[in-house]
Length: 189
Image (cartoon, rainbow, N blue to C red; front, side):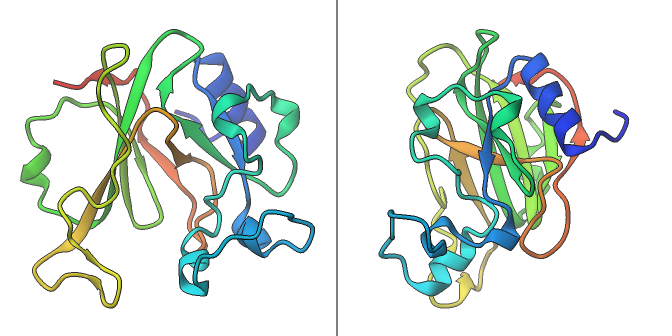
């Protein structure tokens, strides 16, 4: 896929039937820290720093339809999971860190992005699949030390009312999310 600027990529998401949502740019900080925000959260500072560049600009993002005009500079973009405008139902496997790739050898090639610290694999699923949003599926994270000693990564599942940060968003560490494999999402076996 040719390199597209942010607005062109967001338009491509709309054209291909996805649900892009505007999220805060990492230079804007967490929405919890914004002075004009009436919605203050009770997260600890280190938790707020984890969400830099990942927080939706609108609290009602899961129930709202956006247009290209809702994306104002600077911005990042996320893709909402679940039912898409084109009728496809999608979910994402969000891998942070280093996990043994043989865990995923049986999965078909699918829409795949490189993130600031891992990968996103997007799959189609049957409508109304009984999936949820799961953080740290295999309990490999430790709040105190990061990953547990016997693991170097973690897996999250994103589905209905969940979202993933999408290319060409800027990660808080300064790298850009990018597509490794642009294709129609394969069906999850």
